Amino acid sequence: MFATSVVRRLIAENYAIAALPVDLPGLSNAVVTLKGWTLSPVVERFLASVREVAASLHGNQGRGAVRWSKSKVS
Image 1 (cartoon, helix red, strand yellow):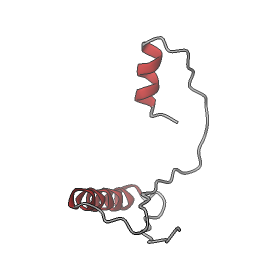
Image 2: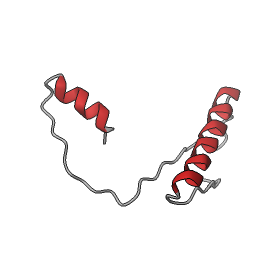
Image 3: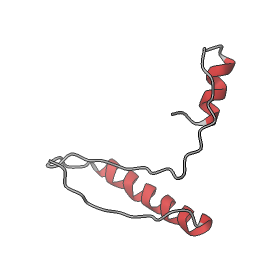
Image 4: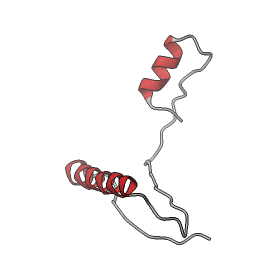
């Protein structure tokens, strides 16, 4: 799955691809980290920024719920 701008660029560069009309009911994104691994300060800062942007988009657009969970996967 690619963003529309990426698909347009690939089509413009004559790659043999086509955009399919797929309606996705809601897009979800997730950040997954490995158990027992320490995140660097840069990654921590990035995640804080992502959370801030997601929260502001949630408030402005009213789309979907912003949930933060710390699931443990072994």
